[in-house]
Length: 279
Image (cartoon, rainbow, N blue to C red):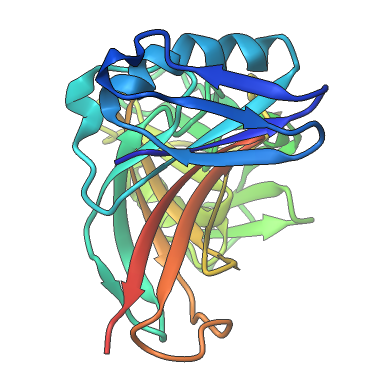
């Protein structure tokens, strides 16, 4: 069963199911406060236009909460409502998890990724460099391809915002460079590299390029209040999103058997799933 939170921004906000015959639903969020209520899938579909219009008017914001295995994607897409449908593991460990997979709809919140293309004009050589997560923050990122001499291929983060690809006197393929970026110890948290074509071409030195096109407030994933590292975000069939995250040690959780919330937040919208700590 979905759970809805409505935050009243200007005066009190009233939500009413227009078809009460299947069960009365009438909720009021007090001014400068909020209301949390459970409803059926059918009720959620019917009140969706009210929620969307209230947010568009700047009167209220809303969040939709789900359960661990929530197959309501079958109910159809509800614009503006992020939701987590599935997670790959229901019981987490206090020591953290690597590669936890999440799947859901509208998790990007209508945002776009900042990108740039390293263009060489040679088949199978170009590389698309994009921000790891969506949002306007990615427009501050840049990438440069250099050749500082021996040592072989190396990728590094310069000044916190620039991806430096140092060929190191070698001639790595585009595929090899992409693997180095996506598997880098720190750069993968900010950047993603994708080959164009087979990736068999051999990129050469290029001056610095700035990423562009990122829009939105950004994305954050937390578990028990602890920030998770986002490894991958895959758009399977928009708006279906699959993503993998690393959950670090959850120091805030004191004992096994406790319940924890994993949240994906994009601006004012949040999708939540409740998980447990394995005994």
